[in-house]
Length: 252
Image 1: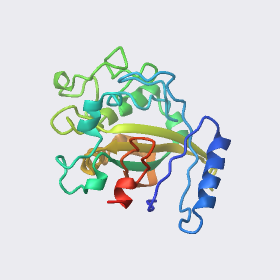
Image 2: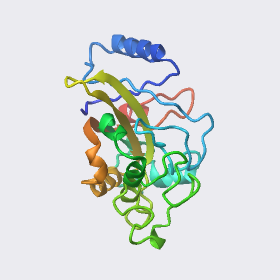
Image 3: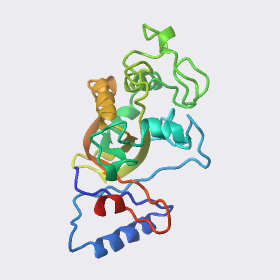
Image 4: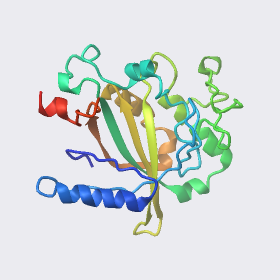
C-alpha cells in the first residue's frame, strides 16, 4: 500500500512492461526500493466513445461507462486538473496536475458466479450485456433518478446510484476512472485471487473520499474487498521538447 512514487507501466505486450520495469529499477537502484507490484491487464476500446466503453471487469460488467469526456479541455479543467484558483493550498509547481487514487479490490468471483443475473444487475444498477441503466435501453442513457425516487427501476442501494447520485452531492465532482483487471492465481484456500486495480483522477481528493463514503456498507461489499492501494499526486506534464517531468517541482 501507498509508497513515495507510483509508476504505471503500460504496453500492448506484458514482456515490454516487464523489461521497462527492470530498466527503471536498474537506473534507480541507489535511491528507490520496490515496495509493491501488481501485474494487470485490460481490453481497451478500439475507439474511445464518450459515456461508453467495451472494457469489462472480471464481474462481467462494463467498466468506465459514464466517464467524463477526457477529450474536452473544459471538462478536464472542471473535474481533473488542479489550479491555484480552485485550491489555494496547491503550490505553484503542482498547478495543472491531478490527484490520483489507486485501490486494489479483490473480487470474490466464485461467490459472484453463483449469484443470479437478476441479483447481479440489481447490485450494480445496470444491465450486464448492454451496460444500460436498469430500465434503459442504451449504455449512454442517463439514469433518471428524480423520476424513480423509490428505486423501482434502479435500486436505491445499487452501486451506480450510490457512487454517482447525479444530484448536488456529485455534480461537479465526477471522477475520471481507469480500471485494470488482475489475476494472481489462487490463494491459500484454493480460491481464485482476482480483482480490479481501480484508478481515478480528480482535482480534489475529497471528491473521491465523498464517493467512497457513500459506498460504505453497500450490498456489493459481499463480493468485493479492498486490499491495498494509495493516494498520489500526478505532476504537470511536459509542454515542449525542452521540458521534463517534474521540472516545476525541482526547479521551483
